[in-house]
Length: 151
Image (cartoon, rainbow, N blue to C red; front, side, top):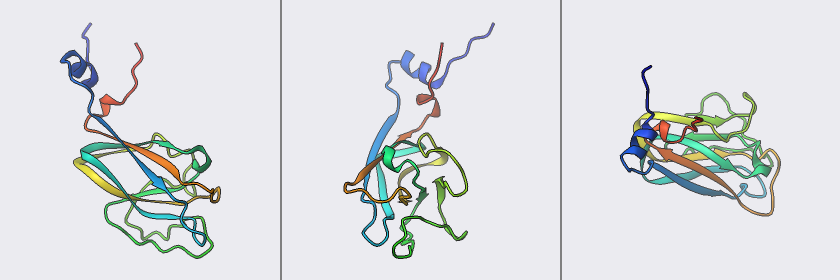
C-alpha cells in the first residue's frame, strides 16, 4: 500500500507552522438610511492565494457579502437594508442569499496570484443592531493547511 501525506503533514514533519493569517473587520450596519456596508477594506499583512470567510456574527448570518478589488461606491436606495444586484457588478459573491442558500461561513476562493487586500460590500437583511459586528477572514497559501483531517 502506498502512503500519502498532505501539505500540512509535510510542514509539521519539517517543524514549520501552518501558513495561516486571520483578519477581522468591523461592519457598522450602514447608516440610518441604508443599513448596507460598502467598500469595507480587508487587508492581510502578507499576500495569500487562499481566502476563506471563517466567522460572522450570528445575528447577521443571512447577510449578502460580495468581494471586489477596488472601491465600487455601490449605490443603495434610501431606506433599503438589502443589496439587490443588477447583473453588472464586478464582484465575487461570497454569499448571495437571493440566489443561493446557506450561510457565508466556510465559503472560500483560491487565486493563482496571491491577494493581500480586497473590499467587501454587505447588506443586513435582519435589520440594524445598536452595535457594530465582526466578520473574520482567513488567508493561507496552502489549502491543505486548513482542511480538517480525520485519522
